[in-house]
Length: 164
Image (cartoon, rainbow, N blue to C red):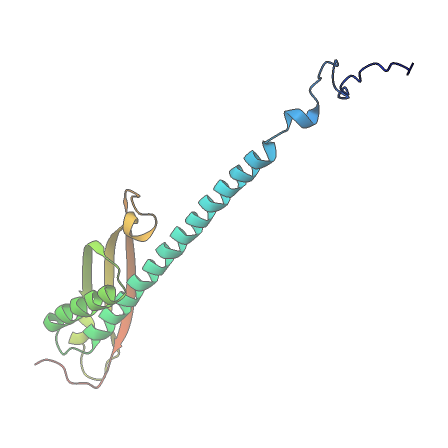
């Protein structure tokens, strides 16, 4: 008679019958993904702030360009009356060309230098004030405005004819 063999029992897993204790590794599961998400959000927020700051600085530069152009245009005029109009037009052209949308702008010119006697050194001063919506500059949908002011001085040719 052949020897009888007992049926084989299925193999037991090493953890079978043991109580499972949580380990530090089990408690930390998923925390790396969460940390990466937090860091990514912080980096994106920082990037948005840097871009917004750069756009604000660029707009300030464009307002300074407009003031310089306004002072130069005013200094080429022969009278204070025509200097204000020329300065305003030059500043608006510069701001429009630079795509700076002023919600409210103010261009003032001190053209007293145009009334100086021939041979006397004088200058014309132009001030440009531009109120820009932050939504146009920084982040779309951002409420509020930023007022940017720039001033420029241009010399008047001492020997150029003046208005009578």
